[in-house]
Length: 225
Length: 415
Image (cartoon, rainbow over all chains, first blue to last red):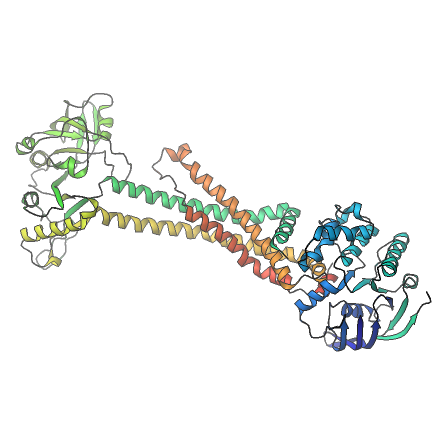
């Protein structure tokens, strides 16, 4: 599903070159639930940007669902993001002044899909937010906003769900709720989930924990189910 | 992204910042309203001038003496020579062929103070012959026009235009009354029906007398001068042929073989119309161009506000890109927003400009003046709307492209 081969990424900050990733090899199989951990500066955000096709590696190869992502242009990356990746962000990132339903519909609009309303409603239903479909983000609680964001990530039926610190802006009750929802999606719908977090108890919901330090994978362990 | 979705997002964005959107639209609104109103004023002037000239008669040809050349060939200016004579008029009227000319009349102008009882009025007195009503297309409302006998015998009789009657007689019946022109008594024998029109030498401000009486009593002994000959062609379509025929007759009579040396010149209604039209067109263009400047200023306002909008919505653009918006999706969205802004402003501007142009003649201060009523032309309305949407497109491209080129990671990090 996800295959990274010796991926490295170098940023240029003024005159200084920063090596965020120094040759990462990672294989994530379909249906897996992987938590990527690491302190800030460990390169986990860069890794997540590359996995999410928001950025391309400086060197190395990245195959997503069989497609070599390196060398694609901006518009081709946009299409990959639209079809194969569902993003869940730390700050929810719902579009303001737009109802939950319409936010969920948005990826389908860019995909030019049919039956958008019913599909968006079904996605909201699957995260238990059907009764809040007509509400705008400001009228929803943090947990509800994150559920809407998860519905938006699921609606195109993507190959992977990429969650970047999904509980970072939530209280502990809502955090547990969201993590249970993600586990459920992984278990019952066999969704492939890549979770980025720095909290060990959040990572504990995943089946496999990969730890990153200074741009390299230091541990990669599968938890007993 | 389909157009419907782009429009929905555009309206939502504009509604979210109502005051800002309204002020931006106001720039385009004023520009478009100004273009429509000023072009309508120019058109109105053009229509009024045309109507006035048309009321002179579309098939009328004026013959003027051309610049006299003194001994050394020094031009002495327009109208200074006296090359036209009564014999020319007679020659035109007694011609054997030339079917396109109907009749010709001499005109001798004399200014004069006109008095009746204790009323004073100033109007030019026109000396002419019996064909005047036919050639100049005047109808007699009351009494009658003078006869050939009045001309032959220098009878002191006049026929008055309606403006003169109103100013001099009020409610008194003028026919049969005696007025004084330059202290000479003239008897009023008829009144012309009003021809309408105002300003630019009203057709109703006339006093017409036999040319022989004008020569004898009003010209102050300057002799039997004719300031112009007016001829009528059989129809508006035969004016050109009639002009050729007139030229031939007059060249022959004046024994001039080279037409470029002619001592007279012809001007048809069409020539005057063409000149007036070119002046009116220039006027309309100048007015339109001045108003167009305000449209450009409005367009810069749109560009400015779109740049602010793009900066404000950087994060939203980042989200949209992350969930699959391509370059052209974002470009379309912001271009449509700019065009909705300018198009709405343009539509409201058309409504305001048209309303002002239509209502202007009802404003008392304007109604009482001779200001021509504005005429809104449909092409100018369509053009103004097209231009306003085009301005949104033109001034929206830069901000929209800036939005579309944003890098998703940086846009998402934007606070």
